[in-house]
Image (cartoon, rainbow, N blue to C red; front, top):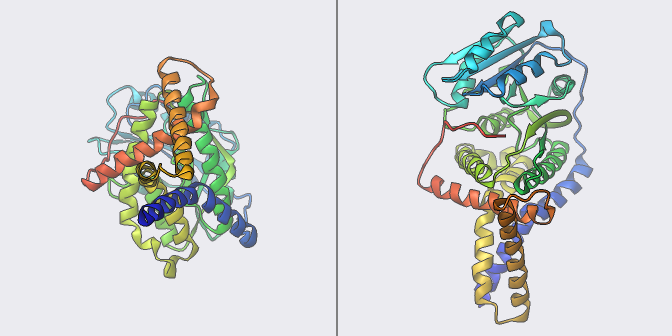
Length: 382
């Protein structure tokens, strides 16, 4: 029983460490280190690259949004990299040719990463900005994003993703809460030196630091890690705002999370040398805490539940087991509410979303063990 108890409490400690203890330690270290970004009002030439596959419903609005950004028009280039689109996407983009928008077509569909690898070398900007096909920037977002590059130590910048949940769905509320938590962590990690995770919808990199990636690699995870590898900072700017609609169905969110988790696990394997603290210092600890252990939380939760059954003869463990069941019952209630079409029931959205992302991580880990990879996918329905 001693070993069983040790594993139980170890699993509980690790799960708690990932979501609570790590942020507390990061807060204390951020207060001590206070690494700032020396922003400045600069206007280098910028290329906004939008990878698109069958985005006829969104691409027009996205291009209009980028054309209206508060940035000198003679210093801005917009490129749409069409990944073998078969709908009206290309035709819509061509309609903006007289306003300077360039269409680059990848004839054989190979995925977002391959499209970026094709488009970036053709871009004329000193700074490359990555936008999704449904990403709507605040008017001043581009200026805020670019201002970080006045600091020569900065190589990559990510903005603030704000998920809009217009339909009041349970999964949408959970997604919004999760992004608020992630954005808070990124602000802390910027004060430590570099953030670990970014949002692919509003990111920017110095073109000189762009590294071509394999088609199966996830660009908004691998590319920032490569920038850190080269000795530059990856920072978060909460003033560079992006609005995107959250997904309204847990099935859509689940599929997206499985895909992102699977590609991230492969990225962690590819970039595992960054876990060497002797060479990468504090960032190695951040990467271990924020990503490696985060993707393992499903295992800690499973061990806690199973071992709790074996220990339920004691009052303390029986109490913990009841609390675990109440939490998972709340998640099931969230699922029931979603399936029955009820909206704005906020009591259950956190446990429901927590279970969705950890089940997705478990599913992704199973695929990872079988060496499954994913380079292409159907665009999200947000």
